[in-house]
Image (cartoon, rainbow, N blue to C red; front, side, top):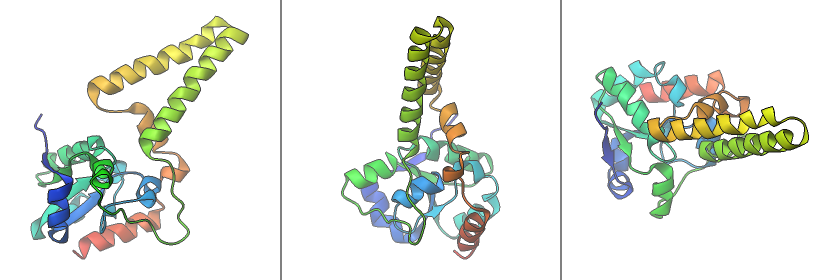
Length: 191
């Protein structure tokens, strides 16, 4: 498996005017702050957007962005499997902001949600705590919940994927409305 091409935040900022930037985070994360001009196509909808991304790639370079770089690397691999060249932003929007570059916020009634990594940490911590408390107060078998989360975290680190994030991404506050995704795809086609 090849590692996608990466651009560091400074290089991406310099070339921003010539890039089609695709943010593969959830709509809630995107609303909380994104690279200027980025279009939101959540990772689990990337296959639906393939024809439009291919068309954009024919007219210039594509940069895929997420919070840290892991999801954008996965998206780049999917694009590469379909012979669509794309680069990923090294360190994601976290590195972009840390370098002092501006993040744009969504306009209108959309409210920002926690980033996916924060949602995963909160959910994992809550389930571990719940397993421990129920294991002490009700029955030791409830500690299996805590052990299950521990195994999931180890597998997540080893595979650089996160099953819990995939599940959390399906929650309503993390899902794009069909109209939003259709609008984003139309914007992508117009590039």
